Image (cartoon, rainbow, N blue to C red):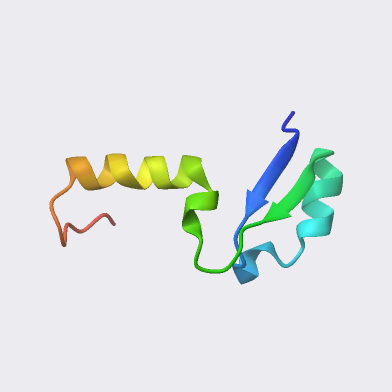
Length: 59
């Protein structure tokens, strides 16, 4: 199980309390406009940018 989740302020996480309870995890939120607080996401974004050209369709 995950010990904690770090979420952004996306409306998709409106039910964060239920998510935390079902996963038995602590929930933390990033500060607005500080995406570096979610390091794993930024690392993944960097890898995508390295492999795909700008304006590539990722559908």
